[in-house]
Length: 524
Image (cartoon, rainbow, N blue to C red; front, top):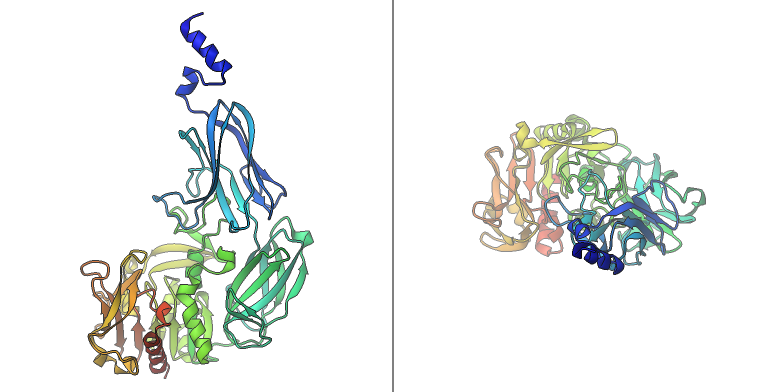
């Protein structure tokens, strides 16, 4: 026997790869995943795992190798950055042949999808696929209670349908007003909501294998505001679906508060197509649109809701200020209708995405003397259009010849995810003494700490635009955040905060007084 043949025989007897086999990495064939209970949408490389269940990954290994299996979450990761965070892993050395590895998600694992990435001898990777690409590894959905409303806003008396996906045999469903004062006073601690309906138990046994529609109720004669539907399973799983109750007619109050529902869905990292990646253009530029009627991660509360909306809505409710609440799509009317209805429109959050019709209506509202209050930053940044229930991303408004600073007074200049922040320094209190009244702030004095995303004036800003406070060079030379104000010949008054976390700082009494002063001046 030749030496090469002898060494090959010895290697084979010991279960080791031959020289030829070692030259090529081991491979996994017939890779598949299943679980203890099938759910709608499950297939060869996608499985739904119920509470206490297991995902079983099977494959045929072409030769002996070290296999590492990792559960990977990817919801807020953009292409070009690391794939995500490993929440669980196991590693074993296996001989050639058929094998099965299992993952039993614990109660600390959030409901969502995870890629089960398999690394073979540190040389071959299954699960390195990109969004909307070829899925080459198992994806597991940890089952929660997924709840979504079919629309973002309703009028009192309109039917409110829910889309629910859960394998529980029954659900308790209840509606809460965020920060409301209605009774009974049962409070939901996650949303700080007050119950406006009793809990209703729904028999869900016939819908345990897939998503189903539930006609919950007709929206009540409650005051306009932000509401959450809560669905709770007997085992403690819970899901929420936010919706806006708009007024029966525009102008019930003379102030409208617009919650940025387009932005909520743009930042929604729910994975509906089962590739392990969130279906959002913030995950990948190859995703051109998002579905407007889908559940949110984080148990159904919109991403950054607590930063962009919570403080302001809580302040309104706490101080008893009345307002009509609207969704982005409710702006898709005429500017004349808006002006007849309202003296002031407030954008408390991140109103980044606007349709042409909504942009036109707000501009016309301003041109007719309507007042605007922008309490965050990066507003009216990009045009979107509606295609059925999908929101389709299009070009930047400034690239379409309509820079947003022409409306807002300032526009987006930079972002660094909050790495650099600085206080605002008052530079022109005399230009708007009504704004600073009672705050104790004078020129040269600082307040707050701002950054994350910032706005500043451009050549397209109305010539009357005045800088009232500035966080100078917060994102490098010439990249300052600016709090601005301007008035028009038609009598419109427009105040813009210039920093995305401005409204989140309302726990500072000086900032709360600034917002209260702005509300009083612009709504009067």
